[in-house]
Amino acid sequence: MSFKLVRPKPTRILVLNPNSSQSMTDGLEPIINSVDLGPSAEVHTFTAPKSSPASINDDEDIEASYNVAWTNFMNHDPEQWDCVLVACFSVHPLVKTIGSAYPEAAVTGIFEASVLAATSLTGRTGDKWGIITTGKFWEEHLTRGVAEYLGGKGAPNLGPNSPFAGVESTGLNASDFHHGVDPAVVTQKIREATLRLLEKGVGCIVMGCAGMAGLEETIRSAACEEKGERWAYETLHVVDGVRAGLVQVDQMIKDYKLRPRQGR
Image (cartoon, rainbow, N blue to C red; front, side, top):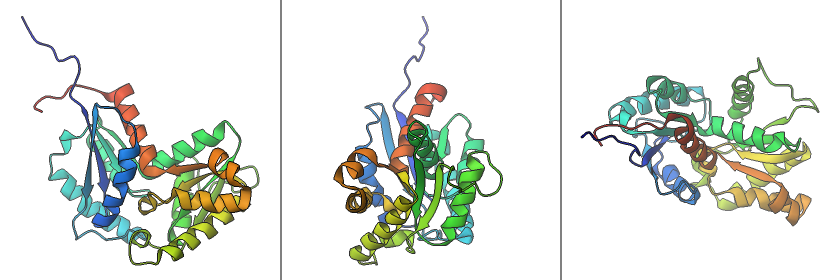
C-alpha cells in the first residue's frame, strides 16, 4: 500500500514590502484581511530591514530596495512561499527576479496586478482609467511602465482614444500617507489628483502607492462632489493594488501552479 498526496497544504502567500517602513506594512493589514481568499490561504507580510529606504521615491531607491530585499528574501527560506506579491507600486525588479528564480510560485507586483485589473474593468465598458501616485518622478516612470507592460514601445498614446488617461501625482511621499503629514493635507492632495483624472473622463482610478491602502474613501468622496453620490459609489471603480494582487496570485496558484510540496 502506498500513500499519495492529493490535496496540498494551505497556500502560503507572502506580501513583500521592499522598503523599511513597518508602519506602511502594518497599513496593508486591513486590506489583506478584507480579501476573501478562502480557508486554504494564509498570508504573511515582510518588511525590508532598515538598510532599505523608508520610502521609495526614485530610481536610486528602487535599486537600493531591490538589493536589500532580495538578499533578505533569499536568506529566509524562499521556497516556502507559493505566492509572492511585491508591495511597491513601481516597475520593481523583484517581480521578475523572484519569478525567474522560482517559476513554480505565483509572483506579481501591485503595479502589474493593478494594470490588469484596470484594463479588465474598463475593457467591457469603454471607460478610461488613470493612476493617482505620490511624487512627480512617478508620472514618467509609471506611464512608461504601463506602456511596456501592455506591450507597447515608448509612452502610450495619451490621445482622446486611449483608455489610459495617464498619471496624476500628489506631491507626497509614500510615507506621508500614514504619518508625518497632516491628514487634511493628504486628503486635499488626493482630492485634487482625483479631480484632474475625472476631468480626463476616467471611470476607474488606480491607487498608485502601497501607502495609499485604505484611502479609497477619500477618492470616492472627491468623486461624489464632482459627479454625485450614485456615480462615485456605484459606477466608479477604485483599484487597490494589494487587493488586486492578492486575488491574482491566489487565482494563479489555484488555476495553473498548484502543486504538492514536501517537507512542510
